[in-house]
Image 1 (cartoon, each protein chain N blue to C red):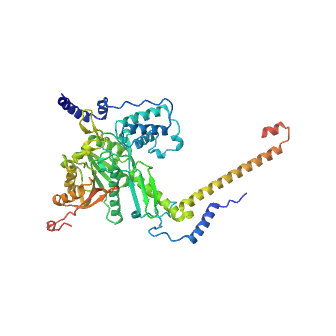
Image 2 (cartoon, helix red, strand yellow):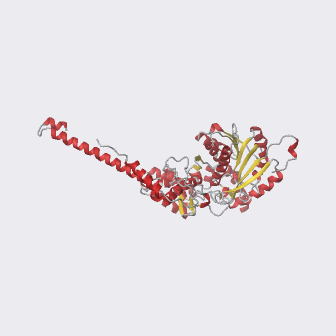
Image 3 (tube, rainbow over the protein chains, first blue to last red):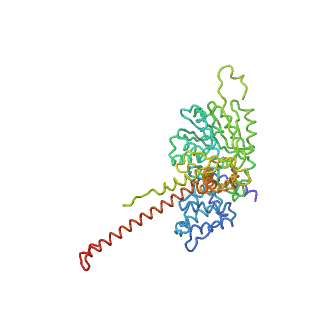
Length: 364
Length: 166
Protein backbone atom coordinates (compact mmCIF):
# COMPACT_ATOMS: atom_id res chain seq x y z
CA UNK A 1 0.00 0.00 0.00
CA UNK A 2 2.86 2.32 0.80
CA UNK A 3 4.39 1.57 -2.56
CA UNK A 4 1.21 2.46 -4.39
CA UNK A 5 0.81 5.75 -2.58
CA UNK A 6 4.41 6.59 -3.46
CA UNK A 7 3.85 6.14 -7.18
CA UNK A 8 0.68 8.22 -7.23
CA UNK A 9 2.45 10.80 -5.13
CA UNK A 10 5.32 10.91 -7.61
CA UNK A 11 2.84 11.54 -10.40
CA UNK A 12 1.18 14.25 -8.42
CA UNK A 13 4.54 15.74 -7.69
CA UNK A 14 5.17 16.14 -11.38
CA UNK A 15 1.74 17.63 -11.71
CA UNK A 16 2.11 20.08 -8.89
CA UNK A 17 5.64 21.03 -9.91
CA UNK A 18 4.50 22.23 -13.28
CA UNK A 19 1.31 23.88 -12.17
CA UNK A 20 2.93 26.83 -10.54
CA UNK A 21 3.25 28.09 -7.00
CA UNK A 22 -0.47 28.48 -6.29
CA UNK A 23 -1.20 24.80 -6.69
CA UNK A 24 1.92 23.87 -4.78
CA UNK A 25 0.67 25.95 -1.91
CA UNK A 26 -2.73 24.26 -1.85
CA UNK A 27 -1.21 20.81 -1.97
CA UNK A 28 0.78 21.75 1.09
CA UNK A 29 -2.38 22.57 3.02
CA UNK A 30 -2.15 19.55 5.27
CA UNK A 31 1.39 20.33 6.37
CA UNK A 32 1.01 24.10 6.42
CA UNK A 33 1.59 25.81 9.73
CA UNK A 34 -1.63 27.55 10.71
CA UNK A 35 -1.51 31.31 10.30
CA UNK A 36 -0.77 32.96 13.65
CA UNK A 37 -3.58 35.17 14.90
CA UNK A 38 -3.41 38.93 14.42
CA UNK A 39 -2.55 40.90 17.56
CA UNK A 40 -5.48 42.15 19.61
CA UNK A 41 -4.22 45.72 19.98
CA UNK A 42 -2.09 47.91 17.75
CA UNK A 43 1.62 47.30 17.46
CA UNK A 44 4.63 49.18 16.12
CA UNK A 45 6.92 47.98 13.31
CA UNK A 46 9.67 47.27 15.84
CA UNK A 47 7.34 45.12 17.88
CA UNK A 48 6.23 43.30 14.74
CA UNK A 49 9.85 42.61 13.78
CA UNK A 50 10.55 41.19 17.25
CA UNK A 51 7.41 39.09 17.27
CA UNK A 52 8.00 37.56 13.86
CA UNK A 53 11.71 37.04 14.48
CA UNK A 54 10.77 34.93 17.48
CA UNK A 55 8.12 33.08 15.52
CA UNK A 56 10.51 32.29 12.68
CA UNK A 57 13.09 31.08 15.21
CA UNK A 58 10.53 28.80 16.85
CA UNK A 59 9.60 27.27 13.52
CA UNK A 60 13.18 26.87 12.34
CA UNK A 61 12.93 29.35 9.49
CA UNK A 62 16.42 30.42 8.37
CA UNK A 63 17.56 34.03 8.83
CA UNK A 64 14.67 34.79 11.21
CA UNK A 65 15.70 38.36 11.94
CA UNK A 66 16.56 39.37 8.37
CA UNK A 67 13.38 37.77 7.03
CA UNK A 68 11.26 39.71 9.48
CA UNK A 69 13.10 42.97 8.84
CA UNK A 70 13.03 42.80 5.05
CA UNK A 71 9.34 41.95 4.88
CA UNK A 72 8.25 44.67 7.28
CA UNK A 73 10.56 47.29 5.76
CA UNK A 74 9.14 46.44 2.34
CA UNK A 75 5.58 46.94 3.52
CA UNK A 76 6.57 50.32 4.93
CA UNK A 77 7.92 51.30 1.52
CA UNK A 78 11.61 50.92 2.37
CA UNK A 79 14.28 48.49 1.28
CA UNK A 80 15.94 47.95 4.63
CA UNK A 81 14.87 48.49 8.21
CA UNK A 82 18.03 50.57 8.71
CA UNK A 83 16.78 53.17 6.27
CA UNK A 84 13.64 53.87 8.30
CA UNK A 85 13.57 56.65 10.87
CA UNK A 86 13.24 55.68 14.50
CA UNK A 87 9.99 57.69 14.61
CA UNK A 88 8.44 55.56 11.92
CA UNK A 89 9.53 52.35 13.60
CA UNK A 90 7.83 53.29 16.85
CA UNK A 91 4.62 54.57 15.26
CA UNK A 92 1.62 52.26 15.48
CA UNK A 93 0.79 50.29 12.35
CA UNK A 94 -2.66 50.53 10.84
CA UNK A 95 -4.91 47.48 10.89
CA UNK A 96 -4.40 47.05 7.16
CA UNK A 97 -0.62 47.23 7.46
CA UNK A 98 -0.67 44.68 10.26
CA UNK A 99 -2.81 42.33 8.19
CA UNK A 100 -0.41 42.66 5.25
CA UNK A 101 2.58 41.91 7.47
CA UNK A 102 0.87 38.87 8.87
CA UNK A 103 -0.01 37.61 5.40
CA UNK A 104 3.52 37.94 4.03
CA UNK A 105 5.24 36.62 7.14
CA UNK A 106 2.93 33.60 7.16
CA UNK A 107 4.03 32.88 3.61
CA UNK A 108 7.63 33.00 4.81
CA UNK A 109 6.74 30.31 7.34
CA UNK A 110 6.39 27.97 4.39
CA UNK A 111 10.09 28.62 3.69
CA UNK A 112 9.36 30.60 0.56
CA UNK A 113 12.44 32.74 -0.06
CA UNK A 114 12.07 36.34 1.11
CA UNK A 115 12.67 37.57 -2.45
CA UNK A 116 9.59 35.67 -3.63
CA UNK A 117 7.56 36.77 -0.60
CA UNK A 118 8.10 40.46 -1.30
CA UNK A 119 8.25 39.85 -5.05
CA UNK A 120 11.36 41.91 -5.58
CA UNK A 121 15.05 42.09 -4.84
CA UNK A 122 18.05 44.28 -5.58
CA UNK A 123 20.96 43.43 -7.83
CA UNK A 124 23.71 46.04 -7.78
CA UNK A 125 21.91 49.32 -8.39
CA UNK A 126 18.77 47.74 -9.84
CA UNK A 127 15.55 46.67 -8.23
CA UNK A 128 14.11 43.66 -10.03
CA UNK A 129 10.77 41.93 -9.85
CA UNK A 130 11.03 38.37 -8.54
CA UNK A 131 8.59 35.54 -9.19
CA UNK A 132 8.77 31.79 -8.65
CA UNK A 133 10.10 29.65 -10.20
CA UNK A 134 12.53 32.08 -11.82
CA UNK A 135 16.02 31.85 -10.31
CA UNK A 136 16.84 34.50 -7.71
CA UNK A 137 20.13 36.32 -8.43
CA UNK A 138 22.93 35.54 -5.97
CA UNK A 139 25.38 38.14 -4.57
CA UNK A 140 28.34 36.41 -6.25
CA UNK A 141 26.84 37.22 -9.61
CA UNK A 142 27.12 40.94 -8.85
CA UNK A 143 30.86 40.38 -8.99
CA UNK A 144 30.56 38.69 -12.37
CA UNK A 145 29.02 41.89 -13.71
CA UNK A 146 31.76 43.94 -12.06
CA UNK A 147 34.38 41.74 -13.76
CA UNK A 148 32.86 42.31 -17.19
CA UNK A 149 32.53 46.05 -16.61
CA UNK A 150 36.13 46.40 -15.41
CA UNK A 151 37.40 44.52 -18.46
CA UNK A 152 35.38 46.66 -20.85
CA UNK A 153 36.49 49.78 -19.01
CA UNK A 154 40.14 48.74 -19.32
CA UNK A 155 39.71 48.17 -23.03
CA UNK A 156 38.46 51.73 -23.46
CA UNK A 157 41.29 53.16 -21.37
CA UNK A 158 43.92 51.16 -23.24
CA UNK A 159 42.72 52.72 -26.44
CA UNK A 160 41.46 49.50 -27.96
CA UNK A 161 39.24 50.68 -30.80
CA UNK A 162 35.71 50.77 -29.51
CA UNK A 163 33.17 48.57 -31.23
CA UNK A 164 30.74 50.63 -33.22
CA UNK A 165 28.05 48.67 -31.46
CA UNK A 166 29.34 46.61 -28.54
CA UNK A 167 27.10 43.61 -28.02
CA UNK A 168 26.77 41.17 -25.21
CA UNK A 169 25.17 37.75 -25.32
CA UNK A 170 23.90 36.17 -22.13
CA UNK A 171 22.91 32.55 -21.76
CA UNK A 172 20.31 31.99 -19.05
CA UNK A 173 18.69 35.36 -18.31
CA UNK A 174 16.64 34.30 -15.28
CA UNK A 175 15.17 37.56 -13.98
CA UNK A 176 17.42 39.57 -16.33
CA UNK A 177 19.86 40.62 -13.62
CA UNK A 178 23.14 40.33 -15.53
CA UNK A 179 22.05 41.76 -18.88
CA UNK A 180 20.02 44.59 -17.41
CA UNK A 181 22.81 45.51 -15.03
CA UNK A 182 25.32 45.68 -17.90
CA UNK A 183 22.96 47.70 -20.05
CA UNK A 184 22.29 50.15 -17.23
CA UNK A 185 26.00 50.71 -16.64
CA UNK A 186 26.98 50.90 -20.33
CA UNK A 187 24.61 53.09 -22.33
CA UNK A 188 26.34 52.08 -25.59
CA UNK A 189 25.83 48.38 -25.06
CA UNK A 190 23.23 46.27 -26.84
CA UNK A 191 22.28 42.91 -25.39
CA UNK A 192 20.87 39.59 -26.47
CA UNK A 193 19.70 37.17 -23.85
CA UNK A 194 17.97 33.81 -23.78
CA UNK A 195 16.55 31.22 -21.45
CA UNK A 196 15.01 27.78 -21.82
CA UNK A 197 12.27 28.84 -19.39
CA UNK A 198 9.31 30.86 -20.68
CA UNK A 199 8.79 32.17 -17.15
CA UNK A 200 12.31 33.57 -17.13
CA UNK A 201 11.85 35.15 -20.56
CA UNK A 202 8.60 36.78 -19.42
CA UNK A 203 10.08 38.07 -16.19
CA UNK A 204 13.16 39.47 -17.94
CA UNK A 205 10.91 41.26 -20.40
CA UNK A 206 8.91 42.71 -17.54
CA UNK A 207 12.04 43.90 -15.72
CA UNK A 208 13.48 45.36 -18.93
CA UNK A 209 10.30 47.37 -19.45
CA UNK A 210 10.23 48.56 -15.86
CA UNK A 211 13.80 49.80 -16.21
CA UNK A 212 13.32 51.36 -19.62
CA UNK A 213 15.95 49.11 -21.16
CA UNK A 214 13.72 47.07 -23.46
CA UNK A 215 14.89 48.84 -26.60
CA UNK A 216 18.46 47.61 -26.10
CA UNK A 217 17.72 44.02 -25.13
CA UNK A 218 16.60 41.16 -27.35
CA UNK A 219 15.09 38.33 -25.34
CA UNK A 220 14.68 34.85 -26.79
CA UNK A 221 13.06 31.66 -25.56
CA UNK A 222 15.78 29.22 -26.57
CA UNK A 223 17.26 26.12 -24.98
CA UNK A 224 21.01 26.32 -25.58
CA UNK A 225 21.25 22.53 -25.17
CA UNK A 226 18.63 21.70 -27.79
CA UNK A 227 18.43 24.75 -30.08
CA UNK A 228 22.07 25.69 -30.66
CA UNK A 229 21.51 26.07 -34.41
CA UNK A 230 18.60 28.46 -33.84
CA UNK A 231 20.73 30.52 -31.51
CA UNK A 232 23.63 30.76 -33.94
CA UNK A 233 21.34 31.77 -36.77
CA UNK A 234 19.91 34.62 -34.74
CA UNK A 235 23.07 36.44 -33.76
CA UNK A 236 26.13 38.08 -35.21
CA UNK A 237 29.48 37.61 -33.43
CA UNK A 238 29.58 39.45 -30.12
CA UNK A 239 32.39 40.94 -28.06
CA UNK A 240 31.15 39.59 -24.78
CA UNK A 241 29.55 36.31 -23.78
CA UNK A 242 28.38 36.04 -20.20
CA UNK A 243 26.59 33.36 -18.25
CA UNK A 244 25.63 32.13 -14.83
CA UNK A 245 24.53 28.71 -16.08
CA UNK A 246 23.15 25.92 -13.89
CA UNK A 247 26.36 24.52 -12.36
CA UNK A 248 25.41 22.47 -9.35
CA UNK A 249 26.38 18.82 -9.32
CA UNK A 250 23.25 16.64 -9.50
CA UNK A 251 24.24 14.83 -6.32
CA UNK A 252 24.36 18.16 -4.47
CA UNK A 253 20.81 18.99 -5.45
CA UNK A 254 19.57 16.74 -2.67
CA UNK A 255 21.26 18.68 0.10
CA UNK A 256 20.09 22.15 -0.79
CA UNK A 257 18.53 24.45 1.80
CA UNK A 258 14.79 24.33 2.44
CA UNK A 259 14.26 27.62 0.63
CA UNK A 260 15.47 25.99 -2.53
CA UNK A 261 14.59 22.41 -1.83
CA UNK A 262 11.87 20.89 0.21
CA UNK A 263 10.14 17.71 1.13
CA UNK A 264 6.87 17.62 -0.70
CA UNK A 265 3.98 16.05 1.17
CA UNK A 266 4.65 12.90 -0.77
CA UNK A 267 8.21 12.77 0.53
CA UNK A 268 9.93 13.32 -2.80
CA UNK A 269 12.79 15.81 -2.69
CA UNK A 270 12.23 18.55 -5.20
CA UNK A 271 13.34 22.13 -5.48
CA UNK A 272 10.08 23.65 -4.50
CA UNK A 273 10.41 27.30 -5.25
CA UNK A 274 13.22 27.83 -7.73
CA UNK A 275 13.30 26.03 -11.06
CA UNK A 276 15.65 23.03 -10.69
CA UNK A 277 16.63 23.42 -14.33
CA UNK A 278 18.28 26.70 -13.34
CA UNK A 279 20.51 24.89 -10.86
CA UNK A 280 21.26 21.36 -12.04
CA UNK A 281 24.39 21.14 -14.17
CA UNK A 282 24.36 17.38 -14.48
CA UNK A 283 26.64 14.81 -12.92
CA UNK A 284 29.73 16.97 -12.93
CA UNK A 285 27.88 20.27 -13.03
CA UNK A 286 29.43 21.00 -16.42
CA UNK A 287 26.67 19.97 -18.80
CA UNK A 288 25.52 23.45 -19.76
CA UNK A 289 28.95 25.05 -19.33
CA UNK A 290 30.49 22.68 -21.86
CA UNK A 291 27.75 23.42 -24.37
CA UNK A 292 28.23 27.17 -24.00
CA UNK A 293 32.00 26.89 -24.42
CA UNK A 294 31.62 24.60 -27.44
CA UNK A 295 29.54 27.29 -29.10
CA UNK A 296 31.71 30.18 -27.86
CA UNK A 297 34.11 30.33 -30.84
CA UNK A 298 31.11 30.77 -33.13
CA UNK A 299 29.45 33.29 -30.84
CA UNK A 300 32.46 35.49 -30.14
CA UNK A 301 34.29 37.87 -32.41
CA UNK A 302 38.11 37.86 -32.45
CA UNK A 303 39.51 38.47 -28.97
CA UNK A 304 35.99 38.44 -27.65
CA UNK A 305 35.68 37.14 -24.11
CA UNK A 306 33.47 34.70 -22.28
CA UNK A 307 32.75 35.19 -18.59
CA UNK A 308 31.24 32.36 -16.60
CA UNK A 309 30.16 31.86 -13.03
CA UNK A 310 30.92 28.30 -11.96
CA UNK A 311 31.20 25.87 -9.05
CA UNK A 312 34.44 26.27 -7.04
CA UNK A 313 35.63 22.87 -8.26
CA UNK A 314 35.24 23.74 -11.92
CA UNK A 315 38.05 26.10 -13.02
CA UNK A 316 40.85 23.51 -13.40
CA UNK A 317 38.39 21.06 -14.98
CA UNK A 318 37.23 23.68 -17.46
CA UNK A 319 40.77 24.73 -18.32
CA UNK A 320 41.75 21.15 -19.04
CA UNK A 321 38.61 20.40 -21.02
CA UNK A 322 38.82 23.54 -23.17
CA UNK A 323 42.46 22.89 -24.01
CA UNK A 324 41.62 19.45 -25.25
CA UNK A 325 38.25 20.07 -26.85
CA UNK A 326 37.63 23.61 -27.99
CA UNK A 327 39.68 24.97 -30.84
CA UNK A 328 40.06 28.71 -30.94
CA UNK A 329 39.14 29.31 -27.32
CA UNK A 330 41.76 30.03 -24.68
CA UNK A 331 41.30 29.78 -20.92
CA UNK A 332 42.69 33.08 -19.63
CA UNK A 333 42.14 33.03 -15.90
CA UNK A 334 40.04 32.03 -12.94
CA UNK A 335 39.00 34.59 -10.32
CA UNK A 336 37.84 34.23 -6.76
CA UNK A 337 34.62 35.61 -5.35
CA UNK A 338 34.35 37.74 -2.20
CA UNK A 339 34.26 34.64 -0.01
CA UNK A 340 37.56 33.49 -1.48
CA UNK A 341 36.13 30.64 -3.55
CA UNK A 342 37.19 30.18 -7.20
CA UNK A 343 34.05 31.34 -8.90
CA UNK A 344 34.67 32.95 -12.28
CA UNK A 345 36.32 31.79 -15.49
CA UNK A 346 37.43 34.11 -18.24
CA UNK A 347 38.11 32.72 -21.69
CA UNK A 348 39.09 34.44 -24.88
CA UNK A 349 38.51 33.73 -28.53
CA UNK A 350 41.79 33.56 -30.32
CA UNK A 351 42.39 35.71 -33.33
CA UNK A 352 40.69 34.42 -36.43
CA UNK A 353 43.71 33.38 -38.49
CA UNK A 354 43.61 33.92 -42.24
CA UNK A 355 45.57 32.07 -44.95
CA UNK A 356 47.93 29.06 -44.90
CA UNK A 357 49.69 30.10 -41.65
CA UNK A 358 46.50 29.44 -39.72
CA UNK A 359 47.10 25.79 -38.96
CA UNK A 360 50.81 25.99 -38.15
CA UNK A 361 50.70 28.67 -35.45
CA UNK A 362 51.42 27.62 -31.87
CA UNK A 363 48.78 28.13 -29.27
CA UNK A 364 49.81 30.94 -26.86
CA UNK B 1 22.33 98.21 8.03
CA UNK B 2 24.67 95.61 9.44
CA UNK B 3 27.58 94.42 7.36
CA UNK B 4 27.47 90.69 7.06
CA UNK B 5 30.93 89.20 7.31
CA UNK B 6 31.21 85.75 5.74
CA UNK B 7 32.38 84.13 8.93
CA UNK B 8 32.32 80.60 7.61
CA UNK B 9 34.90 80.99 4.86
CA UNK B 10 37.08 83.18 7.10
CA UNK B 11 37.28 80.55 9.82
CA UNK B 12 37.95 77.84 7.28
CA UNK B 13 40.74 79.83 5.69
CA UNK B 14 42.39 80.31 9.08
CA UNK B 15 42.11 76.62 9.90
CA UNK B 16 43.56 75.61 6.57
CA UNK B 17 46.45 78.04 7.01
CA UNK B 18 47.23 76.69 10.45
CA UNK B 19 46.78 73.19 9.11
CA UNK B 20 49.31 73.66 6.35
CA UNK B 21 51.85 74.65 8.99
CA UNK B 22 51.16 71.79 11.34
CA UNK B 23 50.30 68.93 9.00
CA UNK B 24 52.76 66.09 9.33
CA UNK B 25 53.47 63.77 6.42
CA UNK B 26 50.83 61.01 6.31
CA UNK B 27 51.73 57.49 7.49
CA UNK B 28 53.36 55.12 5.00
CA UNK B 29 50.95 53.53 2.61
CA UNK B 30 48.45 56.33 2.80
CA UNK B 31 48.18 58.47 -0.26
CA UNK B 32 46.18 61.66 -0.21
CA UNK B 33 45.20 62.38 -3.75
CA UNK B 34 42.32 64.18 -5.31
CA UNK B 35 39.54 61.74 -5.81
CA UNK B 36 37.57 62.45 -8.93
CA UNK B 37 33.84 62.55 -8.72
CA UNK B 38 33.18 63.70 -5.19
CA UNK B 39 32.54 67.43 -5.22
CA UNK B 40 33.01 68.13 -1.53
CA UNK B 41 35.21 65.41 -0.12
CA UNK B 42 38.11 65.67 -2.54
CA UNK B 43 40.90 65.17 -0.04
CA UNK B 44 39.79 61.88 1.45
CA UNK B 45 42.47 59.22 1.78
CA UNK B 46 42.62 56.66 -1.02
CA UNK B 47 42.24 53.11 0.19
CA UNK B 48 44.90 50.52 -0.47
CA UNK B 49 43.08 47.22 -0.99
CA UNK B 50 45.94 45.18 0.45
CA UNK B 51 45.46 46.95 3.76
CA UNK B 52 41.81 45.96 3.94
CA UNK B 53 40.18 42.81 5.22
CA UNK B 54 36.63 42.07 4.16
CA UNK B 55 34.21 39.78 5.92
CA UNK B 56 30.83 38.49 4.80
CA UNK B 57 28.22 36.38 6.47
CA UNK B 58 28.06 33.66 3.86
CA UNK B 59 28.41 30.41 5.70
CA UNK B 60 30.65 27.41 5.10
CA UNK B 61 28.88 25.70 2.20
CA UNK B 62 29.76 26.04 -1.49
CA UNK B 63 27.88 29.32 -1.81
CA UNK B 64 26.76 30.55 -5.19
CA UNK B 65 23.71 28.79 -6.59
CA UNK B 66 23.66 26.33 -3.69
CA UNK B 67 22.69 29.01 -1.19
CA UNK B 68 20.05 31.68 -1.02
CA UNK B 69 20.91 33.92 1.90
CA UNK B 70 19.67 37.46 2.22
CA UNK B 71 22.14 38.64 4.83
CA UNK B 72 24.59 40.90 3.04
CA UNK B 73 26.30 42.78 5.81
CA UNK B 74 29.82 43.81 4.89
CA UNK B 75 32.47 44.20 7.56
CA UNK B 76 35.56 46.06 6.42
CA UNK B 77 38.69 46.30 8.53
CA UNK B 78 41.62 48.62 7.90
CA UNK B 79 44.56 46.59 9.14
CA UNK B 80 47.10 49.35 9.90
CA UNK B 81 44.71 51.34 12.09
CA UNK B 82 42.33 48.61 13.20
CA UNK B 83 39.36 50.72 12.18
CA UNK B 84 36.29 48.60 11.41
CA UNK B 85 33.33 49.65 9.29
CA UNK B 86 30.08 47.70 9.12
CA UNK B 87 27.64 48.33 6.30
CA UNK B 88 24.18 46.88 5.91
CA UNK B 89 22.52 49.85 4.26
CA UNK B 90 21.23 48.21 1.08
CA UNK B 91 20.05 44.83 -0.23
CA UNK B 92 23.02 44.60 -2.59
CA UNK B 93 26.35 43.24 -1.37
CA UNK B 94 28.13 45.13 -4.13
CA UNK B 95 26.67 48.47 -3.07
CA UNK B 96 27.32 47.72 0.61
CA UNK B 97 30.96 47.04 -0.19
CA UNK B 98 31.26 50.35 -2.04
CA UNK B 99 29.50 52.24 0.75
CA UNK B 100 31.68 50.57 3.37
CA UNK B 101 34.73 51.86 1.53
CA UNK B 102 33.32 55.38 1.37
CA UNK B 103 32.66 55.32 5.10
CA UNK B 104 36.13 53.92 5.70
CA UNK B 105 37.68 56.80 3.77
CA UNK B 106 35.81 59.29 5.95
CA UNK B 107 36.85 57.51 9.14
CA UNK B 108 40.47 57.38 8.06
CA UNK B 109 40.31 61.04 7.21
CA UNK B 110 39.19 61.85 10.75
CA UNK B 111 41.73 59.48 12.23
CA UNK B 112 44.66 60.91 10.31
CA UNK B 113 43.79 64.57 10.17
CA UNK B 114 41.77 64.98 13.37
CA UNK B 115 40.48 68.53 13.62
CA UNK B 116 41.53 69.28 10.09
CA UNK B 117 39.72 66.38 8.46
CA UNK B 118 37.12 67.11 5.82
CA UNK B 119 34.39 65.53 7.88
CA UNK B 120 35.11 67.63 10.96
CA UNK B 121 35.48 70.81 8.89
CA UNK B 122 32.17 70.28 7.19
CA UNK B 123 30.48 69.71 10.54
CA UNK B 124 31.96 72.95 11.87
CA UNK B 125 30.83 74.80 8.79
CA UNK B 126 27.34 73.47 9.18
CA UNK B 127 27.22 74.48 12.85
CA UNK B 128 28.44 77.98 12.01
CA UNK B 129 25.91 78.28 9.25
CA UNK B 130 23.11 77.35 11.62
CA UNK B 131 24.33 79.85 14.21
CA UNK B 132 24.39 82.55 11.55
CA UNK B 133 20.85 81.69 10.53
CA UNK B 134 19.65 81.87 14.11
CA UNK B 135 21.37 85.20 14.61
CA UNK B 136 19.69 86.67 11.54
CA UNK B 137 16.32 85.32 12.54
CA UNK B 138 16.67 86.89 15.98
CA UNK B 139 17.72 90.18 14.42
CA UNK B 140 14.62 90.19 12.25
CA UNK B 141 12.36 89.47 15.18
CA UNK B 142 14.01 92.25 17.15
CA UNK B 143 13.46 94.73 14.30
CA UNK B 144 9.80 93.77 14.01
CA UNK B 145 9.33 94.14 17.74
CA UNK B 146 10.84 97.63 17.74
CA UNK B 147 8.66 98.63 14.78
CA UNK B 148 5.54 97.46 16.56
CA UNK B 149 6.46 99.38 19.69
CA UNK B 150 7.09 102.47 17.62
CA UNK B 151 3.68 102.22 15.96
CA UNK B 152 1.97 101.60 19.30
CA UNK B 153 3.65 104.69 20.79
CA UNK B 154 2.36 106.83 17.85
CA UNK B 155 -1.30 106.04 18.39
CA UNK B 156 -3.01 108.11 21.18
CA UNK B 157 -4.21 106.21 24.26
CA UNK B 158 -8.05 105.69 24.23
CA UNK B 159 -8.37 106.44 20.54
CA UNK B 160 -10.46 103.79 18.83
CA UNK B 161 -8.88 104.38 15.42
CA UNK B 162 -5.43 103.97 16.97
CA UNK B 163 -6.28 100.60 18.43
CA UNK B 164 -7.76 99.44 15.14
CA UNK B 165 -4.52 100.25 13.33
CA UNK B 166 -2.59 97.89 15.54
